[in-house]
Image 1: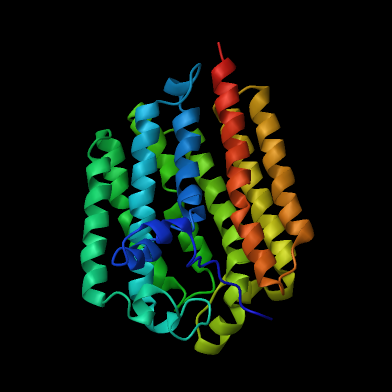
Image 2 (image 1 turned 90 degrees about the vertical axis):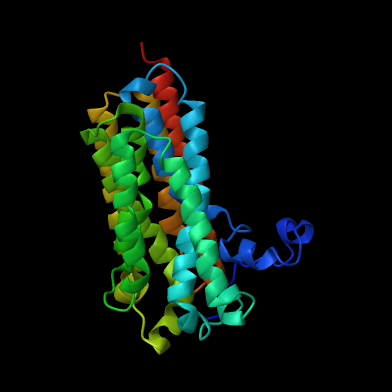
Length: 305
């Protein structure tokens, strides 16, 4: 099994940026925006589904704020993960070239950069409702815990899902000032979804993970990965269907959900867990599943009377 890497040293961002900035762009995975999409999409779902958004497009100001917040907090999450895992990353072929293990960025510099990213995230958060601010602060606990979970449990992907889909709660609170069951259903669906797609991602590293003693659902599921990912994706679809029903969305949402289901089914049907490049491709394709669901929400809300 060869090792895949989605690092792009020839990416246009690196070509146009000053040399001293490039390691920091790499630290936040600026050349690999899939993490931004997977963090931002649950926010967009709730921003579009909340009752105050019905009959119109989601508030552009809130969409912009959440996009900026997703950029900052995704970068912060990557930085924390690299700080915690710097010794492990040095032992894994796919991650040995990252800024910390390769020495391009010192630990002190990474910590200072993390502080800047967190300050940017806080600035965005303070523009939201009081409940959203409280929820945003609360989200730091699972986000901070996640990088350590692979040392203790075969389920770090579940902890990633808990942290990564917080925007489904936060977005609803930003629009409504309260929480409601559709937001909770969106959130639970996102958690199931994340366990599924991050299992695909973890299959890239399973041999290295096994040799250095870290855990993942890829190692736990092994050859049963297809069945388990299907179970988690079905759980996601069921929760998202419940969210649409609770929010009384109309038929375009069903079409968007069906299209997302077909995309997820393609991932499972075509998956070869021994092909790291294929696992990476299917992981990254989840942007389209999330966008299809978003399109269904927006279309349904827009035609509501």
